[in-house]
Amino acid sequence: MVQSLPNQLRIGIIGGGQLGCMLMEEGFRYDLHFNTLDNEDAPARHLARNHIHGSLQDELAIRTLALESDILTYEIEHISLNALQKLESEGKEIIPSASVLQIIQDKGLQKLFYQKNNITSPDFRLVKKADDWASALHELGNPQTFVAKTCKGGYDGKGVRICKAGDSPMAGSFVLEHFVECEKELSVIVGVDRLGKAKCFPVVEMVFDPKLNLVDTLLCPARIPKSILKEAEQIAISVAKALGSPGLFAIELFLDKNGKLWVNETAPRPHNSGHHTIESCVTSQYEQLIRILCGWPLGDTTSISPATMINIIGPEGLTGKYQLANLGTLLGMPGIYIHLYGKTETRPGRKLGHITVMAETVEEVLKKTNEVKVLLAIQAA
Image 1 (spheres, helix red, strand yellow):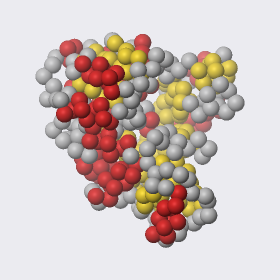
Image 2 (spheres, rainbow, N blue to C red; image 1 turned 45 degrees about the vertical axis):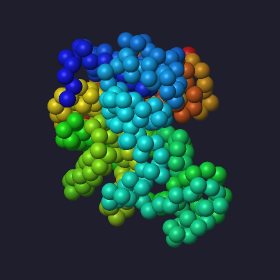
Image 3 (cartoon, rainbow, N blue to C red; image 1 turned 60 degrees about the horizontal axis):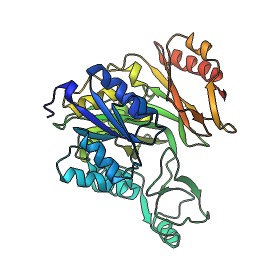
């Protein structure tokens, strides 16, 4: 357990994007101090007590952050694993642990982790070069449709390709897995404290942009039977606990046409599918992580009301300075909460912010969400 008083605890965040910003905003209520590491234009740089300008792969920069912080966490997976492993061996506390990051950074290791822990995930084969695809697909039963995921470096839908039989193989290390015909895509965020106690946030359903492979909208609570809600929570907790570390984990699942759940991927950090919790749950995903880092009891994850979250994404054909259109109209609508991430320039597919929509019923929140989406637009500044 962390023994420091709240206002003495210095939390180092590897990464200075919007997740770090929202984490710090929650932590400021407890008078916590934050240091960050990222590039000089990172949105979080103005909020941090000390912002270290450097690469997330720079071991020296990470070590500098560690020296100025009592505990480290990270808001992105693509960071130097070697640096974290060395720091942990020297006694620096990192949540989630470097062992978790090692699994999550490599989608091949992640799939093997699910297999080892009897967690239901689509059948797969690992390939290291293009010549391996034919035999791997043969072992999978020569599916007409399958998914190819780069083992390392993918994020926000990048590095994932839905393939058809006969498509040309790609060079490099990939996970080839069965394509699941989805009824819904779901997400469950789980907090695990230092004693191993776990608590789920309500299950959400996600609607993806088919071109960008990014979450377009999510709805909480998910419109699925109670039995599947319960099963999704149980699966998510089993994944989080099997990782063997305190932390906040987002477990993405497929619900297929036959009502079966499959684990897709896990993120060891606050997640896009939990942004709505800032307004719509008693405890947000960010406060939950603060509580875990500080060794405090897990917070109440009860939903206050139905909610949706709409991602604000940079449109095609626009790069550079931008502004949100119809801002006054949006702000005049009740139950609308706008979050902009401090990114000075837009580009196609870039996450610029999100909007949370709340109402008393699922029907009302969906109606209001459609109204917001009609008004939502990014235009040149």
